[in-house]
Amino acid sequence: MTVSIKTSLFFYLLISFSGFTQNIKDDSLRLNTLFSSAIGNIELLDSLEYDELKTILNTKDHYILEDTYWYNLSKARFLSGQIELAFKAANKGLQLNETAGTPYRSAKFFNLKASVYSFKKENEKAIQHFKRALSLVEKNNDLHTAALIRNNIANLFITLSDYKSAYNYSSASYEQLLAEKDTIHLPGVTGVFAITALKLNKLKKGKELAEKSLYLSKKYSSPIGLIVSHHSMGEILTVEKDYVNAIIYFKESLKLSEIYQQSHFIMLNKVGLQHTTLAYKQYAESIEYGEEALKETLQLKNENTLYAIHKNLGYAFDGLGNKGKAFYHLSLAHDYYIESAGIENQKAINNILIKYDTEKKEKELALSQLVNIESQNKLSRRAQWITILGVIIAFLLISYFFYNRLQKHRLLQLKKDQESKRMIAAISAEENERERISNELHNGMASVIAGIKIKLEDYFKNEHHTFLEPVIQQLKGLHDETRRISHNLMPLDLDHQNWIERIQQYCRENSSPSFNLVFINNLKTMLLLNPSVSIILYRSVQELIHNAQKHSEGTVCYVQISQLNKELILSVEDEGLGFRKEVGEDTQGLKSIRKYLEKIGAELEIESKLGKGSLLSIHLKVISNKQV
Image (tube, rainbow, N blue to C red; front, side, top):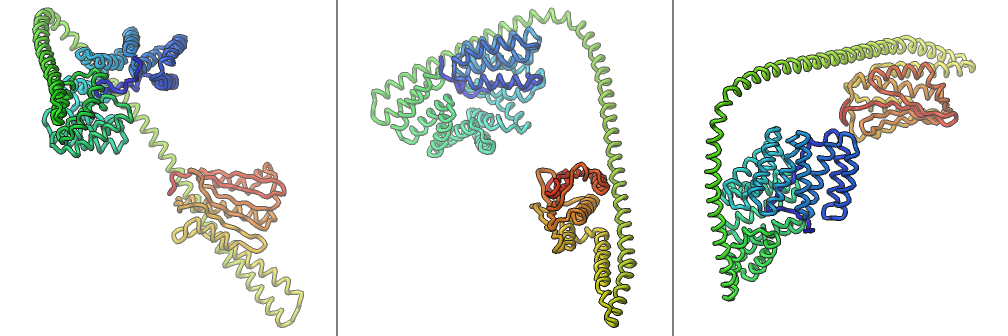
């Protein structure tokens, strides 16, 4: 058989276990990708089976990779329709884990073998292997994988028409995935749960679950979920005899089933459409869907639906007046019904015999078990005390570890807080000193210069000594410069003006025809900074502009604020003389600026060439787009 199998009977989950390959993830991922790409390509699968195993066996500590290899090979063979080869590969994986003494890793191979048995209609063996897989993952407390396996068991019981068992397993699977807020498997599992509820005549619950499955499937874009939920809604509306809407849901489920090649749901939806169109007296359409469903059923070897298909075909042909074909299909439906009843009776007899044989063996074992109980109890009590002591020691060690870690974290945080306080105090002291110097310049030196200038101007007006005019102009310039320096030294008023506006104001006030300051703000939103950080950035930019004004001999200076990813950048660029980078970095002014910026974790970058100007940039990491 070379046809790729997209579903087996209903929809079984071929489960991978996340913990298997944690030490060699890259090689495991490569194997997963290789075998996934080879599904349906038998020649490529044959080549991979030989080449990859040879490579793996030549590697050191190859066990985990070999485990991953057998699982991916088995899954790829199964999905490519090579059932027997898939079965052999799964057995190889089981043998490997049995030798290594790692039973938990065998669970995925039992799950695969169960899917193979289910496909071969060996349902009892399929259930046994699903339950073995379930037992292994439960022992390892892997509740998520256990829920997925329970869904597989529920699907198998649906095909056997054991809806009570299917409901119980599906309910347990649904509750676990719901508690985990699973987004991948929950939509489909909810749809299966809805169908089991409907089969037990729990119409209200089934409808609620089907609607929830539909909602979750659309929310999380789950193809399988959409197929199952639309089909379950079609089933519910059929029971409610709302055949028009039932047909709509079955057709949508059929369309999705064909897109995603879900062959079993293609068959189920055609069976549903056969029944609903018959109930709606669309006999020709019912016959068309019925004959297509019959082909799908025979191809899938799913005999459970043959009775219903032939019965509905008989009624549809009778509705068109074709009594011959009606009798033919109704006769076949009768034969399948008798055969099905015989199988059920035989199953009941087998169950009685198995129960009797089990009880007999249990009585024989009971006597020998009584002899061992007392010695086992003693060993058990001793083991319990050892376990309790071990737990207490482990608890004490873990408590000490976390206490020690917490103390280190507290000390580190305390150190950071102290450094922050020292920085704030230093900045505050510096700003106070600036204010004092500013006041002395403004109230002292500037006032004296202004007084001298006024006296000279009066003398110049009265005596007309032309030699005094240049002196007066120099005094005027000195007075303006002193006022400017005094103003620039004043502390920032960040309560009434943000730091960006303050830099912009500084550029505007200190710009002149001989040295034009161009301010550019590329920030899309206002970036809020700690006041201490704002002050240091402002003073650093102020000093960089002053250096450019004093030494560059340029006529234009660009002051730019921007943000790249999570980094704030303030740059001062001139078109003046430039300087050699190694010489500039040794100047006392730039060293002072660097040291100043280190207080807030910022860096200064310098780009300059002789004759081509200079670019000095301040880089500061920010926490978010709103605040540092």
